[in-house]
Length: 511
Image (cartoon, rainbow, N blue to C red; front, top):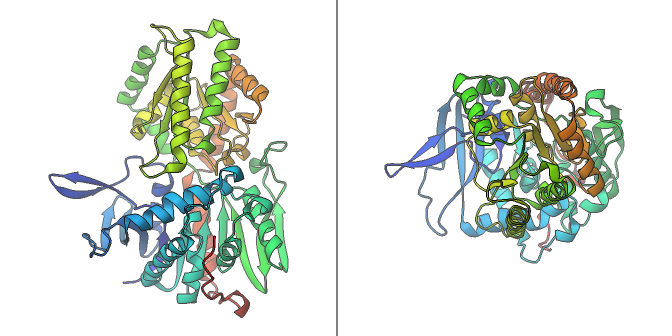
């Protein structure tokens, strides 16, 4: 039976565990984040399918069922596991996505490289995803494609199935036109996105960057804009926008442009941290860490996350304010990248060396300024550390959104605490009561952590309460309802076929 909603995302919607020699599928350990948010749509549609990859040996039939039915707390849905070889995964994800696409998306052109890229393999993997999606889609279905490494899927889907509606959502930043246009494949990428019915982003700035990029490459007939709501403006900050595009007409074809930041499961987080055993765990953390101020920073190893810059600011803090020695502790979780992610090895080495230097030069036998972990914590444990902490320090150099910031707020349940947040995280346009900072400025970083440490408790509580009310209003449920309404509007009209000008034959291979 075909599906009315087909979600296309590279990750499988569950975790695989080997128990007694057998592979067991379990729901994601964290009930928060991108995968659970997308799974929230499963119970809201008549029938849903999810297309993801799964590693398979080259030249042999896959040793797993390609198509399975999954039943979990989100409902019943089909999962199509696309068998990819190690070489395909390496080229598609580890090399092309992370060494060429990721640096440009995050506006680090100096780190951009196509030296090891095989664009033909990237294109072929996108075609395979598109074929799998088309096989699952019912007539008039919505095919919802996620993230930049599947940029080419819409074009293939449109050619194979002109009857379906295509939506695309970017979980990453979208760079300015002059940065995006560094890509030698820019025309192929943009032409693929222009066959979509809806192209979505977290915040207005990314939507405007996308439209500006299209305007730089293609004739655009009309752009319709509307005023950005005050709760998404953060006037005077790096990502603030007064207007956001809502549609664009290109060669006679209208594409909806959507800017809606994904929310967190605020109510669930509050309920977890208020459980008796979690309250006890928070109290134990405070006993184990006797320092007056606990600072947490949760993320993964990635040069765009700004972990190195944060650590340098912390080192300057301890050098500038020796009275804090023995009275402050920074807990850093920088989850190491998977094997094969060469782009992040240098970043991980830099973080580990810097932590060692700070602990060695400033710490004592009885006090280490930093605790570093490169392994992920269970979600409930992470929430307890948020709750126990006085400050959450999240200062990426660039970030599509950042759910950690919202999780920290929800975990504090309207109590005191300070969020130090980079202006270059998408969430900064919402969380205007955070201590917003430009992480490229040493002076601002120093002033921000000083302000967080010295902020009166009454001010902390007032700021946290305002941010808590906002993330409660714009939680993951609000985002789900918003997207479902977009899909309802799509299904109300026939899918628009691409014009002859938009039908593109397979482009030449070049890099």
